[in-house]
Length: 349
Image 1 (tube, rainbow, N blue to C red):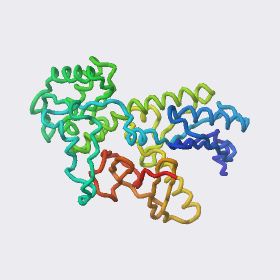
Image 2 (image 1 turned 60 degrees about the vertical axis):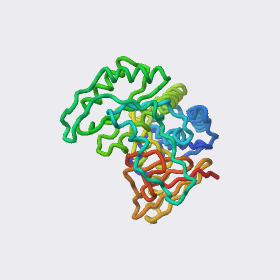
Image 3 (image 1 turned 90 degrees about the vertical axis):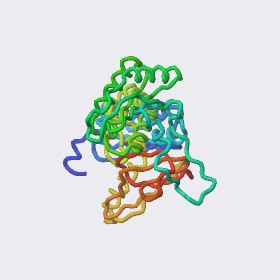
């Protein structure tokens, strides 16, 4: 323990897996205390709150001493794999409703005659078009038909849609139409959870941007509910410290930000394990590692070279497997976000 560490307050780290929830408390004296309890799938925050409360009580620590809560979770990835996200719709430029389904016009194994393409997270009947057009240079070719937006909103809400992704052609160059669509939907249909591509992925490539935005919308309800329950539960036992969620690339986001952009924390739990393994390898002067994580639901593997985990700018999720940049694309739901290059299969132990 260094002199700087001696002045730190209590820090808590939490990792929720499909089977177990792990809780680690780092005391102000630099001593680690651990607890493992069964995950509560219906509401994963319940296990966290109960387990942390019991551990703090056992250690005779006051909840108010906790200064920071670091959190890795598989709520996002499990929601995608189990297809339990919000009923989601898509509003896009006229002529582009099928971008999400066409994808990259590839298949992961060209010799697999039994392969079935994953069903889009948004069925075609809920992918609606509006009149508008932004040119590649950002200039306005066709003004936004606001009536189309309102009609689309009526149709989607009437069909029981809970979340809407807005992805218009070339909006990464000029988001003015997306901003207006978002504003109209929020004002007229406040019950809808709305996410626009310019706020999630302001980059070219229509399929990648559309898919990433759709996944973000699909996860909004689950992530907001979960993190709200977690923060409320922690406050209920006296822990008022800020919650920070591990991102897919090993960074951190405030819980409030993660609620708005859950697509960046889909691989949260596994990423935290990889960063920990890299630190352990550095401490042991072993910078080149193969990291393997066998959970109760999935198994994951990552390569660490020269102390740095392999990284990717995009990856995919599909039934039973997550494919990273080392694998053939087009097998699942594209997420174009920075992430640790994790290979994952749906076979836990």
